[in-house]
Length: 489
Ligand code: NAP
Image 1 (cartoon, helix red, strand yellow):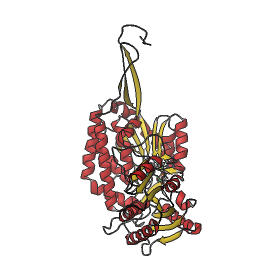
Image 2 (cartoon, rainbow, N blue to C red):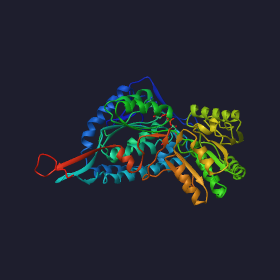
Image 3 (cartoon, rainbow, N blue to C red):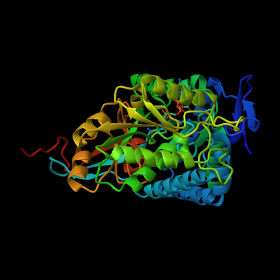
Image 4 (cartoon, helix red, strand yellow):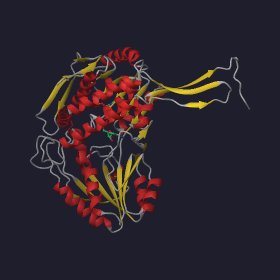
């Protein structure tokens, strides 16, 4: 396994006292790797390499760049189990989920490979005679990608593949908790034939590597996914120096359960949304808003499901839910459970670190009932396996509760009533809505992202995700033989 940073096509161990310690959260005795952190100077060196490599890559035809990305998809498919196993070891999600994430990344690579053929602008009629007007999309230069730990493969892929196919050079800063999966992405791109310096991974702290990216006048585009604490400040800094910025941040996603729905399906979808990936998804279901008498029956089913979830190491095939990613997140989960109790919510099940799992950061799948919209567990992102159930009298009130939080990523409804579906889709304040399915999920060809405090900038994935990494240029070609423009009024 390669460790360190990957700069200008070489693996590099910075000369630094400060170490990255990559530890398995399911068993902290398993140390995956220890290596020196990159510094601000190392980051500058990566920018130098990327700026030079950009000059050749931007001239490589789009379809040819796409072919490199397609080869990366093939290589990742060959290595799917190895990548998934590393992801489970360093992030903690169960192997099946990690494998699903690698496959999702492969779809994203394939989608973006094809985009190499579609980097077109538009031809539009000019108001002037004998004038041909059109637009072209061009790469922007060295782009800075700052990624979180919770999707350590899919997010670096969904940012880097469109950036690369559009002709940019990339500097990726992965989360310090998950550098190994990012390293595997560098290996995959290298084998696929990415030229030296076009894709770089700099592993170091947010304060050094991250801040250097955010403040560098040589990086015209910054794409960030992570917490609101970091993202809102980062947005201001990068935008104030004129960079194009997108920030995808936290979520507090609700499922609205109407009395006419299929309750079995709703309960399974809520279980998967709330406890899948240990609740550590931006799209995780953390709130349920149940209408009318449905609530009692629903809570009983959720309790039953939660109690059946087997918690443990994600490398064990019998396990359904892995640990929190680190000690900090583990403590946050347990603190929010205490907050919920103090606020007067009723703890239905869970609420503790499970017994007998002493070497990892485990939390029981936890369900609270009698939660009200003013409670912190209803309003704030926990990012753990903690689900809050609240009651509403009708759809209107349910939508009002769903919209009452700062975040706006995703929301789902369970109902058979098409009028209610249409009203819900129209009124709910989020970037993505689901009907009769969990709040989670995204597809390569569909725009992904949130509104309100969740997201600023462009949507990711899809055509929008590629366009974000391009500059639009408008071209006027006058073939009239006259020096002025012949405008018809
Ligand atoms: P985080 O703490 O904000 O970190 C995200 C990235 O920012 C990491 O690479 C981090 O580096 C870096 N960073 C830290 N300080 C920085 C600074 N001053 N300047 C520049 N970069 C800096 O978030 P996280 O804990 O990794 O991820 C969890 C959060 O991500 C949750 O809130 C979740 O909802 C959100 N998320 C959102 C989406 C979405 O699409 N909306 C998707 C996934 C996750 P270090 O690791 O070195 O600190």
